Length: 235
Image 1 (spheres, rainbow, N blue to C red):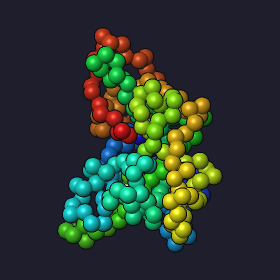
Image 2 (cartoon, one colour):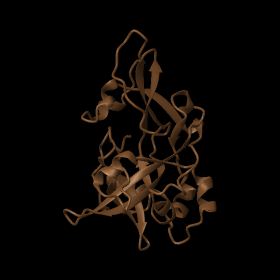
Image 3 (cartoon, rainbow, N blue to C red):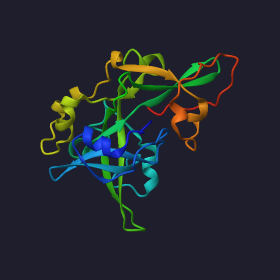
Image 4 (cartoon, helix red, strand yellow):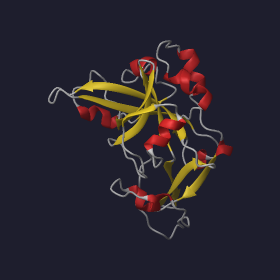
């Protein structure tokens, strides 16, 4: 995903204050790396950095989160790793866009999916606190909730992040009334008309690459061209 918007601007958009978060300007955020999230604690809305990959409180080690970067909307309430967070620890994950890959013959072309007006998307997320038994440090971590793809994204993949409308932000962050019947209808894809698909460089296939050139439009691959194979992040 991309999180290039400055953290102070994220705080303004989401009506929050910056606690401790990266300054922004990241174009290729990968699982297990820190990502910017918006949480609500003690009636305060905060912008924080969390590790991408939720570590359940009962996990034996930090590596448990490596497999939990996503939570499926259809099963999140009954999945042991996510069910407590779904009721008590929900967050917003602001993203300027996310990447998916389209198969071209035996190759894959990366695409950036973003809003047509370039405003940040607000992914539905879950977060957790995990006590590291070695350091004594409390590690904050999170997962992105995914749902069925809209018609546009379905050209690339059948899943995508659940995108919350601004009208739902407050209710999603409010953990005082954990009513699943209020939450489920929020977990839907963004309307296709609000998004665009932008073919981008295969340099996004490596998490070691970053920079604004990664989101620049390129000519899509043809079947005669080569690119690295990249697994989907939001499957």
